[in-house]
Length: 350
Ligand SMILES: [Zn+2]
Image 1 (cartoon, helix red, strand yellow):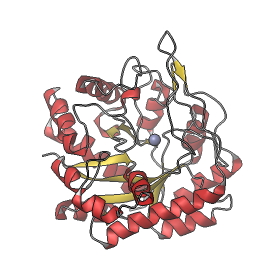
Image 2: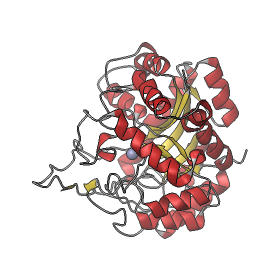
Image 3: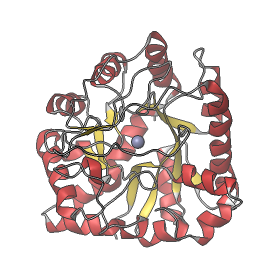
């Protein structure tokens, strides 16, 4: 079984929601559940050895993609910006779930690649605390220091929603990722501070202008943790060839997003999406950037994923499909974990 260290999941969001309904996040993770995609037993069964676990502040109400028109096109408007309270409270709650899971031994909250490798060797899920959209962080970045101390080692300045640091892309098809402005002045400071502290900066969800703003500011490899190929699936969330070229030049990476809306030709929210669509996006990225710049970023617990994977326990079905498409063991090791470990080691000044 090929061990996978994955670039993006929303298990903390699911556990936080479960907690609001009275369930114990530690018990849910340890004992397993039929809800969502990731828990300890299903991760183990699918060789999902670890990953970046997002603190994400949901917008009020149920998120839904806009219904496609007669041509299959849709443009879901951006969610409204959030206020800092209650965003900070929610972020603290999710961080506390991550810390409680660590204390209980349900997973290990890792702050170095040596800790990630040790946890994987020990058969314990290697979690890295990530923040997807920085609504919980103040403009003077004081809270960033606090979250760093709590284990935060990766962040995306924005989700698909604008905030004080920058602008996000909508969920829209077909649409270019060049949908508006990029980083704000505070956003540029955020990137520089992340570079200094040793926090990875994630480019998923940011506008194309924001991507170039980070590219000219950051001293680290460019990373899009869960994004796919715009020329195959032209949603605003996917990356253009020019963006891939910049990522390659920086020796960064892109994590393949399993979200069916970002894999299919028609960008429909339909779980009946074949593994061949995933392989096609991986092939394209490998051809464009090379084997060192392609990784995985499942979006488990955050999106509709192909039925042939279904949840974390089916993760090896993708690995098998890639092997069937001709990827050798050493290629699979890079895609499945080594590329992530390389860029994390750089971002963390190891
Ligand atoms: Zn996302």
